[in-house]
Image (tube, rainbow over all chains, first blue to last red):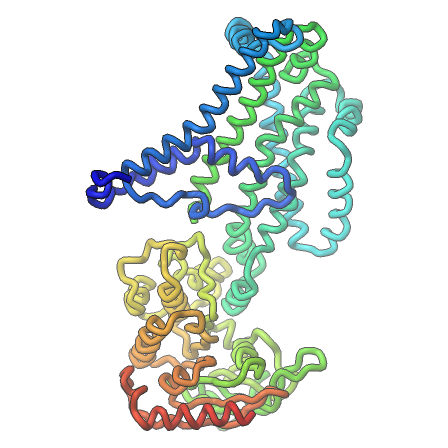
Length: 307
Length: 263
């Protein structure tokens, strides 16, 4: 820091809302939160852990800019290397299209892409809703009754161990080639992480808090609504973030097995017809859908979990 | 459990224990505890770790049952007293609900049972006034994470007072706080005690704290947990922090320390 910087008076506080808004959409934040995906159980993260300490206006602005510039710059760099590589080695477009080709296809084929986007979007959302709803209700039943948990938890684990690609054809056979099968597959893929996290969240109440409830002679339903459910919310949102991205995977896998419309169907179709630019454009759109759903859940979390 | 007491004298006491025994399986946590806690008194419980100090509070507050013997609160059984909110408990950890503001945390006991039409006693002081009583005016809307450890514990004390309890049970409430905060809260607690007239049973592992706060110090012993001695502390109220520097005070602490070491 230069002498001029040091002479600055203590920094005025950045408006809290403004700062929050930037944090939701900062690429580093998205990455930090996505990283939790791999494990089954995701511990809720505290804001304090990921907020860097801000010391001065100039320094904090510089750090924020750097925080955005590094990931964005890296992405642009990779695209340039890709473009250069394709041109230099004269790779045929059907093997690997250059980013510029993909971009052009994205614009030219936008109506086609959009027509295939909506069914996948719909299936993902419905799968997200049904899968998580079922997981939450079953988690509540598990916490309510040890017997129910003992009876059904092994089955839940078993279902989770079946690869989604193996179970998808079975579900398409049962539910037909319509939307239902895709929604069920998307729901199934969301189900398990939410179940596990929700059970943990509902149990994450300190023994002393439960003693407090007992001294107040709280009923079981009061303990649930006033204590257990709110304390499970950070855990639930960690799971919902996982579900926001996996439900899209489920819908696309379902469309692979049998569909005329949808991003999954378009992926299969463009692959077999060597329309590689279209394939890449579809893939980017799919990942765009995941990111969008993820961002929506993150915003909802910031609005609900304020503590 | 109720104490057979035709003369009705049990009602004159905040709590009466007669030969109370607590067992966890084959382990005897408390053996033959008998005492009569007068209304409006401030007693402290002192003893080595594992002597059943906390268990004693949990026995009185209907969290653990007596294997034998009798426990009554204001002439009622512990269960009746619990349902009537005759007592309140302050834990070592503030046990605030992190999603509720300070004020909302204080109001929690008023919400529990409201839908079931249970008659809940309400303090003459509003939740807001109770927060002011513990020195937290202006912090009503703060979330627990925005408060220091001492402040959180003060919210917990305000919450305990919101149902106008006759008996306040405190389980090492200031044990996790630094010395300065602890002194400050000790003084504040004495003030609250004098202003509200509530009876207090206070567990601590600090000898100076036990002597400074208590009119009597109950000295417990281990193996099995039992009441060894009740020591009267004849230091007049109101007590100021500097009482601790007097010879009288150190006489008590020295005596209690000898007792502790002799166990």
